[in-house]
Amino acid sequence: MRGAGPYLDWTARARAVPIVDEIRRRDINNLKHVGDEYVGPCPKCGGEDRFAVHTKKNIFNCRHCDVGGDVIKLVEHLDGVDFNTACATLAGPLPKGNGKDRSGETEIVVAEFQYHDEN
Image 1 (tube, rainbow, N blue to C red):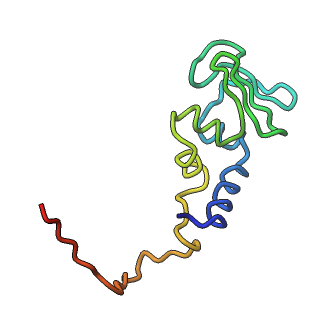
Image 2: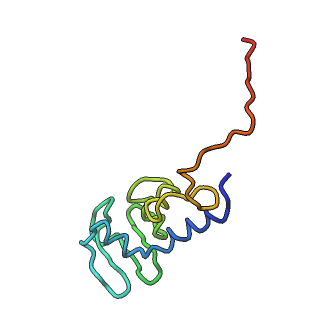
């Protein structure tokens, strides 16, 4: 089971990505800047004036797709992926264990038990 600390830190890092930065990273440049929002066609379903990104609240909404939420939900919507995959897109891979990289360490096996099935 994942430790709550690294998982929560990872999701917090993903959630902290400014939604407008994710819109820019994806080259979604057909939205009009109106006050605190960017408004225009949804990058997923198209159409006119149905998609809005509120920069101060860090949320989005598509009236046609009937979906909205934070930057994680935006990535889920645009990429058609689950929560963990969206977080990995925004914050990188989930750290293992206590967050330290142990990829170069050798695994030590303390005991090994052989199982023999009678069939």
